[in-house]
Image (cartoon, rainbow over all chains, first blue to last red; front, side, top):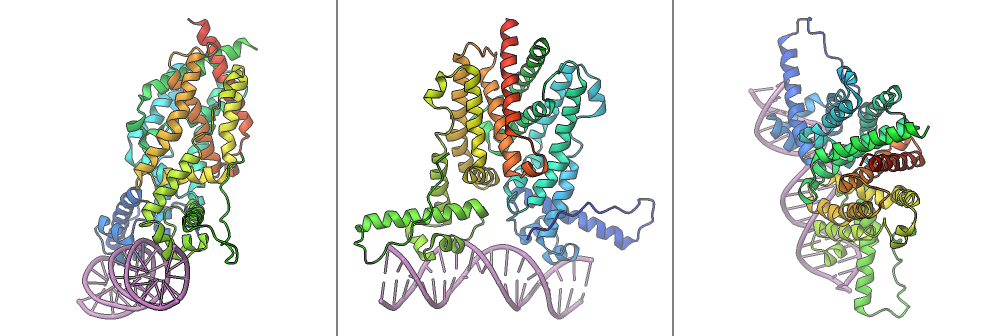
Length: 220
Length: 220
DNA sequence: GTCTATACATGGATAGAC
DNA sequence: GTCTATCCATGTATAGAC
């Protein structure tokens, strides 16, 4: 039932002079996607097309002139949303930092996504709809999770301060503990029922990793 | 894990001397909850009452003679399901093991829940419905997550092999990395797109924690 | 292309026979 | 208490006016 998520459509070259109608159509499409995004992120896939149309400020029929059906709209939307978060994480200039500062900054950037309502809602939606839309989960894993872990794995391998026997497993543990912190605290509301500062998590994670790396180096 | 819930019981033979009405009512209620459980875990809260009645093998009206409405049925069901998983984790005899064996066993027990379809589906459902049913998330956190972390925190505090500055943060990191592994590999299907053995995760997690504990002790 | 109005199916919940 | 049959609101999707 669930079709594959579509690849992002290639936008026309900005230098090409567009017709007015084309421009307006793109604006309308954008308007629809914005409204649909907010509605889906708030209410999940069970959000009604009526609610989406109202939120986007267009008639329901207009939705169907731009998208074949609800599922296509959802797929196009989530594709774009996930693409939006792809570049969060390790940036080239980060690599120049000393190891401890690097790890701290990377953890801070990762956890800063806790403050992004769209990111938190996206996490809930991807996980919650992973049975109905496995393609969505797959895009999330291959575009966001996998590259993040791969970059961290590569960093660990290249860094002589971090001489671990299984860099990928270590990267997964580090990454996973942070993502799960976001899920527990923000998605599930743990910040109210079992609060703890993100600094304590970051500090302990860095301590553990650096201490372990030192000991690991000594025991070789 | 011999903990899986029973299949729905067949309708009692009319020729057999029946239980008294209270007994039959309890059986029927149980039958409904079993069917509803499977349906909700498979399809999420969007599962229809028709589908639930069919799966339970009763008429839809019968559902409403035992539960006021869909939401009440769902709540009662999830309450019981969560209660069912409360005691997974640390058992008294585990504490007698040496530190390393203890940590390995605890991690193995935690990750063994990956093989339990009901647990994996429950995770997806709790997270996915955390916006619509925040009470459900809260029960999950206070009955499952919080006690698990508290027990691990207490163990770390009492164990002189594990002299960490912030035991609770360390417990959260350990627990979180394992739970997130379940979410990524089983809930999201990462076992297909980014596979890795659970032994590698367990081994690296133990290595990191024990190494870090040694180094932490030395630096005091 | 965009609106109002509507067709058609599904879902939650109830009525009434037994 | 349990069934069959049904009500009615909602949801997806479409038709037709402008």
